[in-house]
Length: 143
Image 1 (cartoon, rainbow, N blue to C red):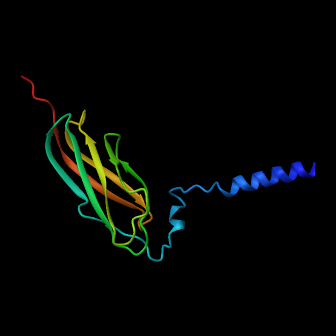
Image 2 (image 1 turned 45 degrees about the horizontal axis):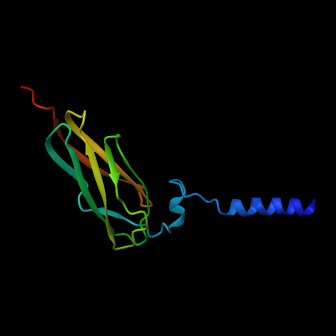
Image 3 (image 1 turned 30 degrees about the horizontal axis):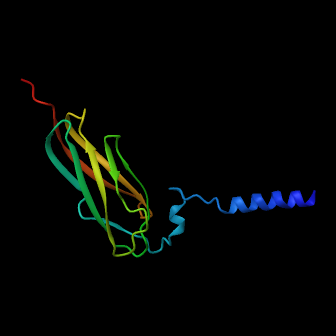
């Protein structure tokens, strides 16, 4: 009986120790915030002009960590399902290093003036950095 309780207790202890999940709420705890990282975008806004509906707008946004600590990106989200981010660094970006994020805007069903945002959530202060896309989507010409 004592052996069974000891094995059960040991198993619970073992599995609970390895179950630390990094979330948006606690990921800044793993970086010393006295010297926070800083995202410096080469450009934070992009005007794609006028395009025909159905065109896929693609843009790579480059950035540099100009802060002192390693930059950890927790998530990148678009303001709607038509604007998505791809190919951002999953490893920490060290001080002085550069990286990029690809943004894709699907103009299907988006006729008119458009303003879309991509929000980069990282261990910076403030935590969110925004990228802005603007332009006009023109419906297909009819004869």
